[in-house]
Amino acid sequence: MSTCFDAIVIGTGQAGPSLATRLAASGRKVAIVERKRFGGTCVNNGCMPTKALVASAYAAHLARRAADYGVVVEGDVRVDMKRAKARKDAIVAQATSNVEKWLRGTANLTVVQGHARFASPTSVHVNGELLEAPQIFVNVGGRASVPPIAGVRDVDYLTNSTIMDVDFLPEHLIVLGGSYIGLEFAQAYRRFGSRVTVVEKMDRLIAREDPDVSKGVEEILRNEGVSIETGAECMALERRGSGVALKLDCRGNAREVTGSHLLLALGRVPNTDDLGLDKAGVVVDPRGFITVDDELRTSVPGIWAIGDCNGRGAFTHTSYNDYEIVADNLLLGTKRSVTDRIIAYGLFIDPPLGRVGMTDAEVRKSGRKALVGMRPMTRVGRAVEKGETQGFMKVIVDAETQRILGAAILGTGGDEAVHCIIDVMMAGAPYTTLRNSVHIHPTVSELIPTVLGEMKPLL
Image 1 (cartoon, rainbow, N blue to C red):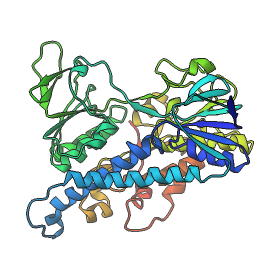
Image 2 (cartoon, one colour; image 1 turned 90 degrees about the vertical axis):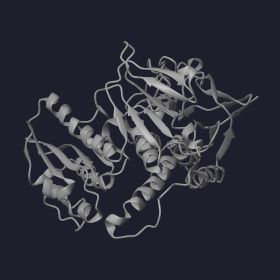
Image 3 (cartoon, rainbow, N blue to C red; image 1 turned 135 degrees about the vertical axis):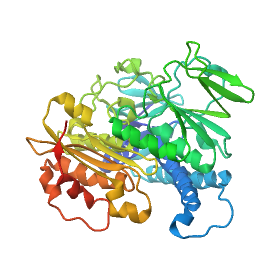
């Protein structure tokens, strides 16, 4: 026996619920399958809980700096980790509950809890039941990568998921991985009161960024007492008492870091290995990401892959855009494509980094003639008034077309201010449009036109 639907959505991450409810609203009979927690990575162990912890860490940091603002705080500032975790858990519980209620309350939509595995290109097994549909959408997300580092199976370690269960203060947290996820946890736990050491294989943090961005981020973290070890090209782990030791050079060099706890922040892998994709004939790449075209169709007609599992974005906002592309193309007959979007993202340390478009290195490699404008946050009034002057603003434009090519705003409000630039880039307008605009004072955004009025050739 089988149950027939018009569409099946596998996974309730950022793209799945919106797609399922929109298809159901169009009159289609839809099933959405979730094997564990509603809401996916972002809601359960990604954006929402990490930013909730970052907020608690920021409150502690600001309290310690109270005297800088003329505010008297009696006694030492300490963090109650159980209460910080409880606050985070409450935020997550509310979000997951809202997603589940939304789905279960949608007409024409059936919620099925269990692990879906393909039986054919048009059917999946869930809990021994066969569900069939001519259209299937895979939205299964990803999980933390655990690379085969020597000794990794012999030590206890945390990932971005399991660290969500921590309700105590690690004495010394080693963060293996100097990129976005690792650095956010590193700063947060340092502000909570832990000793923190970040270990990175490359010669600088977040190596995909320009050197000035990497340097700026490193200075922010070092100023707060985070230790940083780069150039760890050959690593090995071993138990050391009740803690862990991380050797940074396997060739006999004595450089090593010892700590009480270890967080692996070494990227993510897609949850595609146990879906039975071979039964449907769906092609994956060597890393396990489902191969899709620019409209997110897989190698099999009638099957789409959206969100982190397709390797075309790996952000919550790109996952949601995947939903928009697929839904508009199916329901409105448009020809939206992933190539239409401009990649933008943030690093949510404090102060944050807002990034969009090309780096300086990418522009130079392209051979374009370009202009660049920069301004330190020490010359941004809002930053000075808040007492948060670390970082800088940088915008790069094509000298011939006058189009904005990319930007980095590392500083207070940078994750919000960068959207001024994103919108102008998306509109295809020349940078002079933004340069000539009048922004509200006093804000961080008001200095973007000033930066664009002080452009110099990119050398």
